[in-house]
Amino acid sequence: ARLPVIGSSFVASQFSPQHIALSEVKSGFWVTKDSKRVFAISGKATNNASVPASLIQIEGQLHNIEGEPVEQRVISCGMGTTAESLPTLTTREINVLQGLMPPKQFHVLPGQSVNFLIVFLNPPPAIAELSCRVATAQFGAS
Image (cartoon, rainbow, N blue to C red; front, top):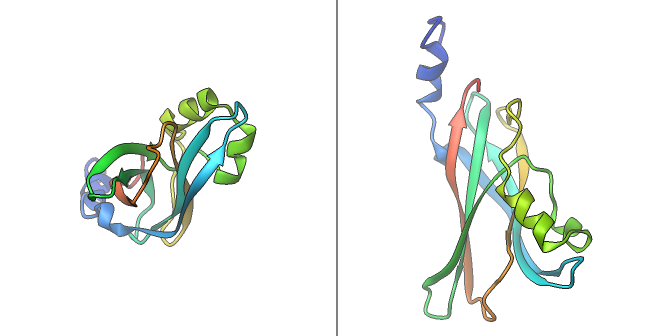
């Protein structure tokens, strides 16, 4: 880690998305400001690595009655949007927020958590199952 040029890259490569734990996962339907029905998955992502995480992306999937995935979405943590704010946002605003990357100075320190929110703007009428996982995590100085 003390090597001047490659030290931080070497240390960061020792960590993977498995060092991020998801908890407090909740889901539900919400009605937006423009009266559209959306489905959201929210929760917390905790950095269990010994170095800061500079990027955490969460993938959410909705599954039909046969267990097949019918919709998938990947978002970046760090945008600060909560499920409770969905009624104050239009679907266009939600779509923009869901596509944003966190600021360059964003990081989650070891042992700390960040909220995540995945919104499906056109959910299927029947959702039998949902899943979410850490799709990507980058560690070390960004």
